[in-house]
Image (cartoon, rainbow, N blue to C red):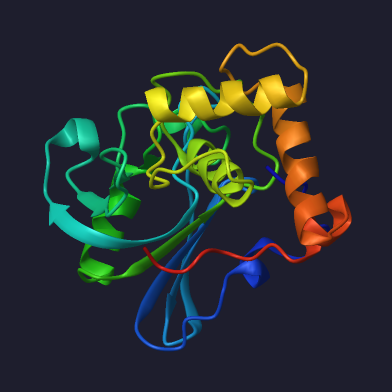
Length: 225
């Protein structure tokens, strides 16, 4: 849940994929960049997940393609996200495209654009989704998402969480959060509010010998899942 990467043009933040197709989605600028063999082919406006239902951040692959009904713009490109069904599709709400993040987590495009993209990229295409200025949300049991997975990874490094980081806020994670909160003498709600998140991150940085700025500067897109 880092800060913005500064004034670098958003398309230049895409990690290099020199072979094949690559889709880079910047939810701060609400833009999609489509590459082939490292060369920019197309740019499209998009809309991602709203704060309560964020899009899955990180790097994925397109594992399914379908021509679903007009509610999805006639095209669907699904990702290999382990905690839910996410993908790129069209919309019956085109006025949000390029204006705000308003979906339930999927990446929405204008119908004519998603139909073009459907023909342009094959199965297996790498998709990277970035959102550096996303709004913080308090995490609780039943939540899913990249932010949940981040907490799982941090608490695992700190020795509090022993499960697999799957992006699902289950009983095991809640107990781990409560244990962390008790040991650090804060209210053991089992939820991750801003205070708990900041403390988890501070303890992680202390463990790794990093300052908060170091943590932001060293941040890079995760490996393909």
